[in-house]
Length: 331
Ligand code: SAM
Ligand code: SF4
Image (cartoon, rainbow, N blue to C red; front, top):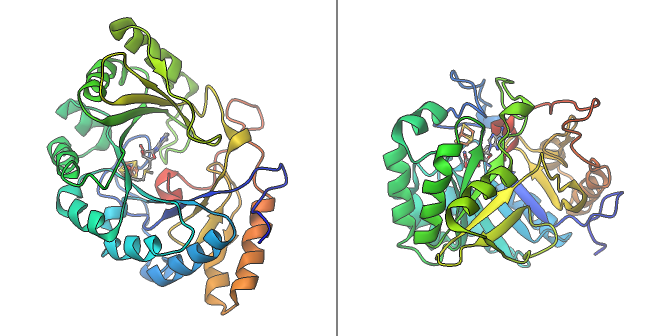
């Protein structure tokens, strides 16, 4: 089959699938305190529809799948979907992004279903600050979830992602760095992006990866860069001279990586997005439900990918906010 490629020559290999728009947190950089109008059940793709789409996409060259949301673990029987996706021939990596609050209960079932990689979002190690950011006083449950994960070594690496915000993150940098020195975690900071539903984002709120790296190096000395796993990798990763884990910086605003982007996204309601900041989508749900064959679905995906956006334009005069906020897209 011809490679899945866009009009700028980028090969698309990674698909993020949002399995729900709902969430049990209300992170200030993502969702409003009161939540959002949730999708109705029949608007959401069934597991059967997700698996069919994924099988076709993998046949076209998608190698990596990440399940996300909303909070993916609130969707019923997620391990069933993990197992079905894991059986698709040709898929090289299947991972999950979660806020971690339900991991204590679900880590075992996810491991048994074949999940091999995970990202746990965690912005603060201080209970009050965690509650301020997520609007839920649940740090202890997330830490218990992380501890539970360690019982399943087949899920590896364990990545911890923190959204970096000026005035909030600075005092947390060294405790998180210490966590990465003591444990086999990959702790990564991601720059705050204008994808929050409340539209509070301001450029001045970004704490850049370079600033965080400087804080760490001042305390621990020079970090050692790890070579990229593959050209489309978003994180710049480093080890300590004397630590077990690693730290990483995902800098979409200060150092955009659009030119090597290999990602597309399928929203919970079956819309294909070729950029986080897309203002238009392709209605895969209607195509799936219209009874067409896989060849027609393949052509729809190919056509959408061909029109993938050049870049995100954050900071340019022409920047337009995406037509959805992060929890509705699937980060
Ligand atoms: N609920 C799950 C979680 O939080 O891990 C998965 C969905 S969440 C939308 C995916 C990732 O997007 C999380 O790591 C979250 O921190 C990140 N995120 C959400 N809003 C963001 C924003 N405005 N800028 C940068 N990252 C954001
Ligand atoms: Fe929920 Fe994740 Fe958004 Fe936080 S970042 S509100 S956990 S979807």
